[in-house]
Image (cartoon, rainbow, N blue to C red; front, top):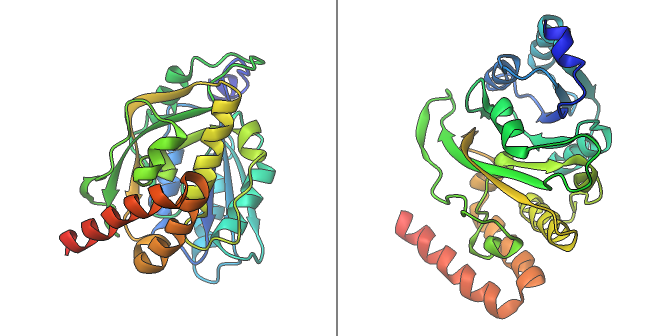
Length: 268
């Protein structure tokens, strides 16, 4: 029965890209969350940076247990960092939509992908299929336990202008039509905020092509709350200011950025 579902090409193929490097401590829950999905048409790309811990053995076992159901591809080679690895995933992706789900993150429920596909109203070969599908995010700790709902909630109607007030949708809850995603690579000049820049450029492209951006009204992702940007908050803010100025102009960027600084002080 699973094989028949996998071959049902009237349903979209969803590419889940997982970037890893020595991620053995947190990777298993990510792999498990993909393995239990009720939706079968999944391509799982694992882009590894030559891990030296148990990451690759975890992936090998995952492939052996699940490759008859999902399309799983592993690449393990040197890279120039997170965003370079993500660009590799964009080049390799064969799905109709792509999302990045990195080690420690997991899909919120076993029906997450099925529900996203329902919301898309996708039709094979239709140029007007939605450009983006998005939703909410919960934060989890290193053991995968719920911490809280993400402070920045997804706007009811999402446009590129919403990101002036921050990354209103978590990157891991931002599903993009793969043909559009491939047309905009991550800018490696940005070390901490290339995902922020990429999402804005994707939304601008959707607006130019008058394609829908769909709010699924679902919690899509359990996100590990200790990413590279979190650990380098001050450097990230400086980089984010430059990106805001590029997309929105210096006046709006400085005004918005002042609020980010105040908010960071209040949080302390």
